[in-house]
Image (cartoon, rainbow, N blue to C red):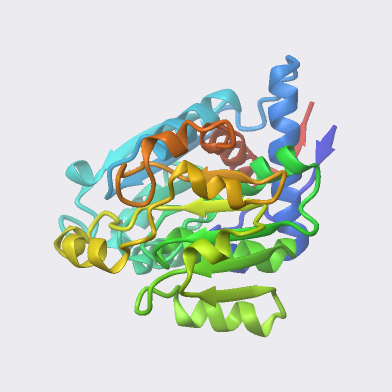
Length: 314
């Protein structure tokens, strides 16, 4: 098997930079790598390659799965926390980029401001991957759509309802729906809509995206009910205001009875129990939350293999 890529040497800052075909290729590659790993086919396209991992924010899944992904593909990762490097404080973003490009084959960064990633990509001659920014979370949605493909066998005709804050995950849902042709309903309180520029871009593409203020009604008949935290890292001072604004948005197991006959529940984690959902929803038989978490590994392997090398061979 060999999967060649138009993505080789590219950055991945948002899903909006991809074509629909490239989005599908990343999903297909992740699925093939996952199946191959479980069957004992374990190519090492990143042998002797190194990924720098910059973290301004705490992380369990992103930190673990990118590290493990590099190892499984034959490469190595270097963890660089903000305490170590002081990006934008101790050293300019440009200086960090120009140093790292001399040592590593790629940079993955989990940042607050999206502009940090844009500046890293501008100055580094190696691929820069968005592990999360305040604007978007592209690798999460690749894992999510890999999970959907495994669950339903096809993305065609899927009805997704996202309930909660119009945050980075929600913004990436818009872009994923644009590429995959899924139907997306976003239920959020007024004032908590997704990014208006991204929303305008997605709607202009003809994507089937709707914004509503009634979360329970939006859940009726959905194939996927998806939620995320109301208070993201960096928004702690807004916590009480947000909790008040999202009253009535807590997903409990009885919501799942309103889904389609094949409907599932998803959450990208970590969960704030008692806010966007209760613990019983995460552990409900219809929940696929930990499938999503597992697929972060395989989605990240696809991103790394296709951006850092010229294909996957086994």
